[in-house]
Length: 478
Image (cartoon, rainbow, N blue to C red):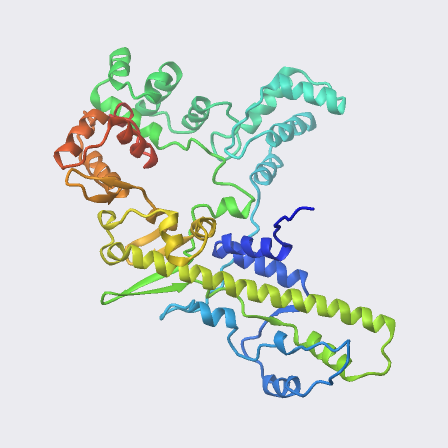
């Protein structure tokens, strides 16, 4: 015999609800309402609510084994319990519907353009094969020979490599420019080919064709010597190339999550009212849920009618009870999720109070998951789920919750500060540097040491990479 501990299905689903950001939770609720007929969105105004309330409060028959008490499944309040406890509304907030557009996928857009081309049926067929092999950035990562072999082995169709190359050229004429390139260099050249052939464009083509490696590593002096460019010529070349899109297919996606990667909907709102911080959940677009009143009424009538209880009726009532229990569990799970989120967020705001007042990373205190777990009594895994993919709107902008978690760093005076403060100082130094002679990591070490922060060079490099800042060689400009 052995004893094991396992999570039930409902517990696993409750954990998943805790992880969902606002947009995904809206979709999850919509899916649950669609799948469970016993769960419904409460209407904003219900003219017959008073009569229904009186009917639901009538006494139930007792002493029946099949009696089913529906009172726990009926919420007569106008605002659901899970919304009231979450305190999820900002003072000046109003409900706004967020539209979702199905849109067109990247491949569908290209196929529509292909249908307008004056090409042969064979060219159209092969061009469709090429489009099907494009990745999400618009690049063709396979060569013509492999695609020809695939058609021969899988479909028994025989074409030459030259046929496939012509199809690739056709796809490369579609919009946006750069589609169908095999690498970054070809992608940029395809875009330049559609531009007006000015001297700057011609110089940019020359650099990409004959000195792409030097340009990608920003060895501008070597390029100037090789082609006899002046500083002004080099600046024009850099300007033309940096205007191009290195991922032409990224602007097209049929996946709703991919399309909304740059659209951030905050999960929390922190408001500063004369030094008093108020936290609210941004749940204004979540529908008000309740157990279906028709289901509840049918179960109530069944409980009160001891005659004519056929087998089919018992099976139907059993199904209704299961659906109602699941609906009530879902409402309770959302309430529990919102209560947990609010509790954790209030602790974070209290811990990082100075930051939410001043809005400067220098005021961030070192904070790890365990710090919040100790104050809330939750496990660190729960804190991690709360902070994952969640955002908070403040008076100073929208921040991911993970922004407030950082390791500690001890300065020369023995004070513990957040490594976010070090990163902020690094960012200021790099922003103020001479771009012709950018600061190296060793020079940044010296500057920080002068300010009382003894930071190793490898730590500087790590912080710089975390902030997405390139090395000094790649930051050099003309």
